[in-house]
Image (tube, rainbow, N blue to C red; front, top):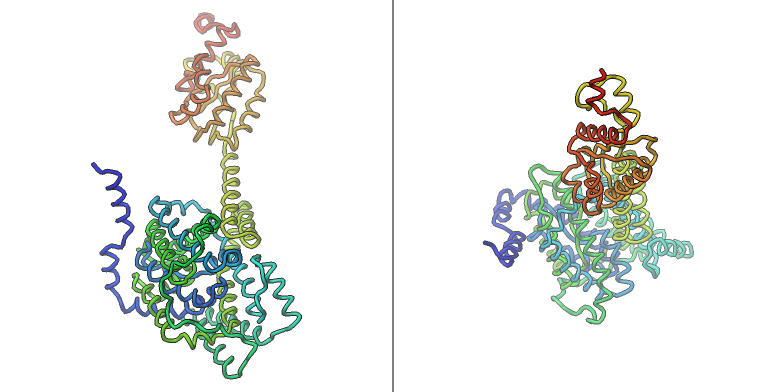
Length: 570
């Protein structure tokens, strides 16, 4: 018999790397090494750009790509996932940097990593399947807009204005540019973005981001373009591990930002892993193990000065397209970036900031799938509303609030749609009459009895509409409710049914039910509705039994002659 401790140990062991992972890396190492090299070339300018955009500098982006990329590749739940700094995470980090500084960001990443480990052990990864596609699409559109707007200061060649609201910062940056235009920076950013966008259409396999950045750097150096400010000096290597973050007294105020970072890391990483699965045949990620790997990665990255990391959809897609088949490709990507950090830091430091802004602007544009947005907007009005609302909330508020708002609105609209499926239709009960009856008897029974069939869910979202319909029943003596097609019932639905029965009783109308299913009995019993029906002796297993009970009730009321008397008269 397993104990809780034994089950806990088995649970943790299921989240750790297995021999199968190691065996997979030896199947086709040549393809994985080539794929990893290609991803590293694509990831280099992105890591630099996201590091700069976060406010911690290019070296933080590189450290994140190397450290988090390695740890997540080893411990993550996807064979093809590539992790590192991302634009979505950068959006969350900017206000944290402004409020708490570098030490605050590193501590937030560490706390978020611990939260992700907790989510993994709690098996929270499975709930990713419940996030609607409209929320995901709106979230992605909003992120793309924020990333693009964040690059405006760099693309215009002006110092980044103070503030953490991207719209305000962008407006002030445009104002500074109008006062003192820097057309060199604009030209470099536009050229890099144009090369990436046009090149990706014509030759998707060529890493045009690195080609454009190298060309922009050479042009800036050869022509001594002083207006094209470079990244600046980078350390030749990763910093030594450090625990020097923030004062312990500040931990309480960092919990809310850490929750936001952990939520985003979980959301984006599991989305990216899903994308990788969809692009391949036979690959399936483990969502809980993916959360575990991302948790360890976010604990490790801050120790080396890195920012919080997630699975990167764009880099993961490149990894899959270039033939990766195992974790070796993601590990190779991290190793190549580490070599660049140690061997080519002086060269990397000369890259113009405007060129990195161009890379991220192009990345933001490519994030927007026009076809998916159009299809989602045309699907239903609810999907369109959720998509737009999530995108606007992402741009105006922050990412976690945007997802929460999107989920709440999507849930409310879904409940509304489900509630509308509930119907109460009057049905002809005469085919269910037991025995032989004349047309006169049928007409007499129909004059006093009405039967309704309830279809669909009877719960809080639509129960009151049901009460309104039932309260408007015509002046009859017996109402029969056929309950066998009620799909679900909650306490609100049971209370509404009880209220309807009591109101009809006060009008002198008897209510009889048939076909109450076992799943409905608990809700009805909890509010006393079942006792009310049982006390009156008006709860029946089948509709014919309910009709027989209704006829007996009418006989006792003197509205219908006893059946044996009517039979003798014929």
